[in-house]
Image (cartoon, rainbow, N blue to C red; front, top):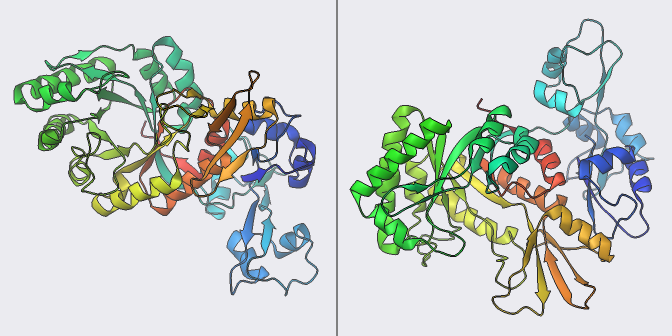
Length: 471
């Protein structure tokens, strides 16, 4: 995939013509509501296996062609190069993906082996549903990009029958699906949730259903509830008994513990609880994970942070989800919700005390709209990234991009003359997060929360990774 940022005077037709793809394929990949109305700064995913390459010191056209397994003449023609011996570091070349014409007797599996790409990737890139249905003369696109295996989790707090179509729509992109959440009570019982539709949809999409428990609500911090459970061995064991009962009844395959605002004095109690939980669940074949506040150092204090012991959770649990979002808080001033510079500070600490393969980077998939001037405590509107993009188009405003936060934003004035500031995610910010996950060699990505349309994300996720399926 290529990410194209719209500039002045461009139309969907001119963009499609440049990349030699159909306008319909761009519309589908980005789920464009207004295909005939683009705004400056809008990021579009271009559905192609072609890519760009920035020339490095010591590289030649021949070495670049060998790297991408593309005929030298294809690169020369596509870039209209008159002297192949004169390229310089910093030059940006368009690299067309190689093609393969199926020969008599060839199978898709043999072709995948020849080009050292996975069968699944080759099928996805060429929109093949049945690998046996290829014929001599068919032209196949050979992927240039190597896609590493990645675990992907998606939390969903829209429950009941509404959850099923949401999980079904993105389930093929998920390793785990986690209905959120069973809230614990002080006696070790839990408040029930209507999670069966989400669980059944997860199984239908071969996504592992992961039970989630928490101690808070939107209006209650939950520190006293957590203390009542964590400080009592009897209550903790009763809670684990109830967890196992629900796992068995509902068909969950593992657990995520999301205890937030835990009192600092309960830090060791929390560690002991997750150890007891692992000791009870592992022999039965269930995995255990936790969700942790985004800490940047061991000494970081505060109700959100002190009791979250990164080294202990990384040692005891199968994996941890780092909640690397909510800097742009709904009741706070406008800013990027998941600024990449802040995420990297959290990851720098996390990888120093935990195995990288156990770390899942949190990725928020919603946008926020703040009224200006901001009044402390005034709640921002939360909605989908697709709506954020469409809102910019409806109001005819250019989209800007903060390169430090790796996040798009814009301002507009509504019908009442009030000014707004919107921060959201687009193709550029998604790619920046995927690149970061690869750079840090993380084990997974965890979305908060399913149900907010963000079509570019899912296209790019599959372009960057092979999603691990355990079912």
